[in-house]
Image (cartoon, rainbow, N blue to C red; front, side):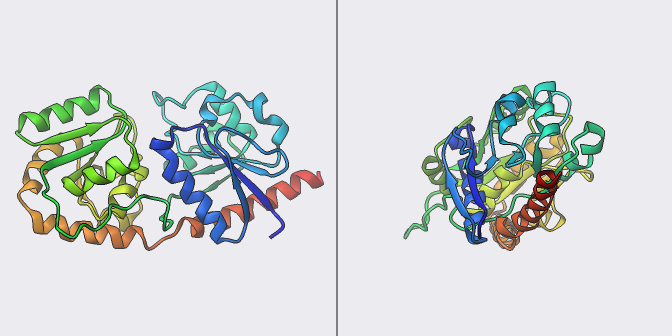
Length: 292
């Protein structure tokens, strides 16, 4: 293919590196010439800016247009870190790939005109998979959580500890260390950072799905998550997460069965399959901008 693409990100590699790698591998699978550099653009290529755009100002990347795609994997809700006038200006002036259908539905209201929906999918090799040990490890951790910690999350974690569960929580963790902890864990926990969001954090869920780990997630009837993926999770609203966790710790067969199902469902759709139509839409839009 004649199109040359360049991926960049200024996000913490421990937090977002696997998502970036999933996009890179997906683009390579589609046959594109793809380069990658941390926190560095390449003006000779189409730049795909994956993380860190929320800290940019539009005038810092305006010279790249129209050869620039901003990938939004932030929650665009009031109270969210990225919901501010500076970042909204970047999105309004860029071509955007949006991971969240809930965000995407708000684009007209937010005056973001040029965008494609690009859900997160599975790309083999992107997420570090825990090695299969010859001897099954002792699952001495009841619940594992990794991600930014705030009052809402601390409240639940403290309640789980008060119930007598062995809990491990990390803000940011290297993939190798996370894999070792997953092998020792009975249950992986996902709980929203904000009360106001109904977007379920698929980047975190993806790690558990790929590792064949049972996942308990905060979820509601109106939460955003692909219907088929719900079947591979244990789901509960915030107020019922502690009770559900306690129950699941004593149900190893149910955990194994759900973990296997989640793995099969998530790995069935590749990141490349979601990227391909979005790239075609971008190039059609870009060619139109150039012609004008």
